[in-house]
Length: 98
Image (cartoon, rainbow, N blue to C red; front, side, top):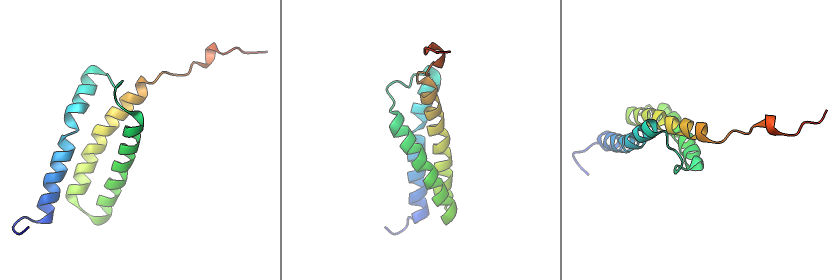
């Protein structure tokens, strides 16, 4: 591909994949509904984004760092709301023997 630099390709990809998370993040914030979202997927994804962010810092790539930093914010919001939705174990209901 002549004429388009690898940084331009990376930047376009970063913008598109990062922007793809915006509608889901906005929907989850507005509705607080995370029931149909997979906790395992978001745990793995958010961890992977952290590694991509570190990788981007190591290779000093602005598109990789900026895209993953923004994606980390979006995925963390969804993950935190998903974790907040999980039923809490109520230890006060357990039989306690004295």
